[in-house]
Image 1 (cartoon, rainbow, N blue to C red):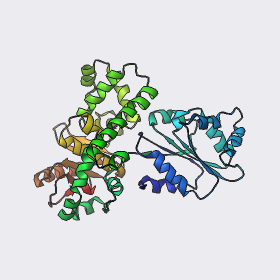
Image 2 (image 1 turned 180 degrees about the vertical axis):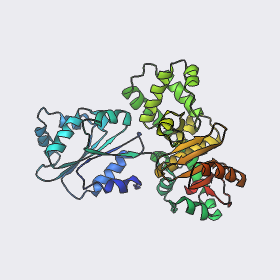
Image 3 (image 1 turned 180 degrees about the horizontal axis):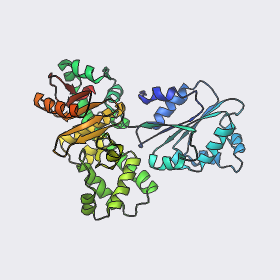
Image 4 (image 1 turned 135 degrees about the vertical axis):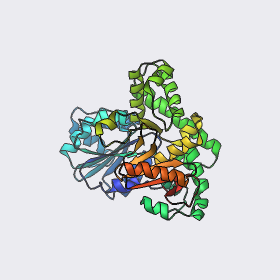
Length: 394
């Protein structure tokens, strides 16, 4: 059975547009499945789905005169006499194809849908050659709401934070808490979610991690010392949810600060980690501030690190709330801190195993001083107190 991702609705609104649709994200997050579902929604028969990991299909575009590509596409039943829909999977495997796509886009009535596994590569590939011709959609592992859909479990999740706090229910919490525990431990890669056996989940997670190293790190990155990169990655996992001390990291693995920054840039641009900045009304101060690190998926952390339950919870919450927009954190020199700030919504969130009223009062004081409109304690365990939101209701 195929399950619809939330991003599908956004992409569907662009089917009739001229621009190229590019779906990017980590490997194994479901880009190909999503694209095939989209392909089935195109009512026209003048469409084709190509996989550029197939070298024969790469050759379709290897023409000196790009007009001759249509002769190759005609073998797949495609015509340029009416609007054509061309789906291309794994575009990063054949970078030379981009020039041909640009030419066909500019000279024919054709709609392209592309997938690629790494923004690190794709942003360089597409930044200039397809400027103004593309719309990029980023696909991540499942958040908890999508996780439940894949489990064929129904749960209505209100997008309004005030409603999440006021309408929480112990009965609802008890109904879904086992699912949340599974999600927090094994994460949201679709392949992992769809199996029930923990041993099989671990096999898939290890395979995803190995695939990342073999197909992204070794192929896309020019890192001469892969073992150093691996060691840094393992050190970073232990620091999930913490501020990064670049000098200390560089010292621990015996490399320069510049090398650590390069590795971090690659990890972020291949969707493996996310770095969030401190909240500030001053943009320059925000950009230059010390970053906190979170990982793409809790399952990876569970298998390859020994982090605390609190860090796992915080990482889980981060991956769930990214759908609400930009995320910052706040920490005052005096020590007062807030785990997450949603600046576009003026909402502050503090993450706790079980929230207390004392912690809520402390959060209220700090959040109100920052000009936040709303603030809540996100609690893994249920509490009926004011200002508390169960983590599974995010």
